[in-house]
Image (tube, rainbow, N blue to C red; front, side, top):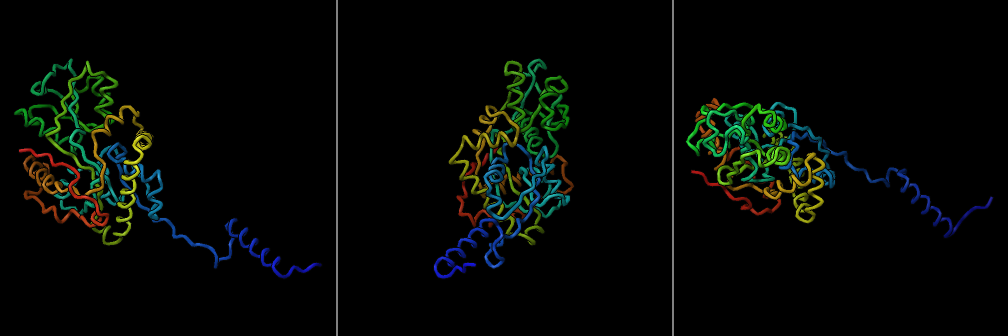
Length: 342
């Protein structure tokens, strides 16, 4: 038997170690031990407002932050927030109205970031054959909207602008995905909801059959990341890493708009041509929206006035908005305009 010694033995030993390492069987002292990914259950509305989340998921930005994010899909932000409030999720995506109603109900929530804004996301889609040509024609008509979210607030504000109350119309509550077919079947005369249902109605039913009202000075809706305050007490670091992943997604969207469009189309199952027109009207930035406190106060006054909440005083929303998570990213504060409504 020939015994290998000298430089040849050294080279052989190095080769063996290299082969073991490449095969994943390196000695324990030489292995890089990775921490297991921390799991987060995210209650999310699978629609275009959540675009940055889809990008972060597909591009591996959550994994980069040592997170495994489990999507729990809901048709509205209100239902997503309700799931989190009930203990069914760690984080929720939702709009400002559900945040307002939760605060009025005494829920100890925390808004840690705004990730999207639009003043042109909710529209009134009405049938011309129902005799609707201008806003006043909605009086006495059957209108579908969603319960406890931005579309309901928009509905009240839109009617008030034209000297009508909710009692002047017949309101019915439907899921957004059911509204286009309800309009086509003439089960309702109009619907008021966020995208993509308005754009889907335009494409499927044709603009010649529809009357569309789309004021952009009535309501600017924010899309927000919300957690329970108790969650922050237990795992603020995970919340910070979640927001940091979304900031990376923002950069990707700015650098790769076409790829981002196709990615969001895949996640939301929205046709690219429809989605392109929607995303052009939406602003995707990770910010502490400076106008959020004023917006929430306005909405709380509305909810109290309309008897949508048991509370009779406006909460101090400063106790529910946590700016530190976005501030740590050194993001510009004034990114979205504030829709001023008297």
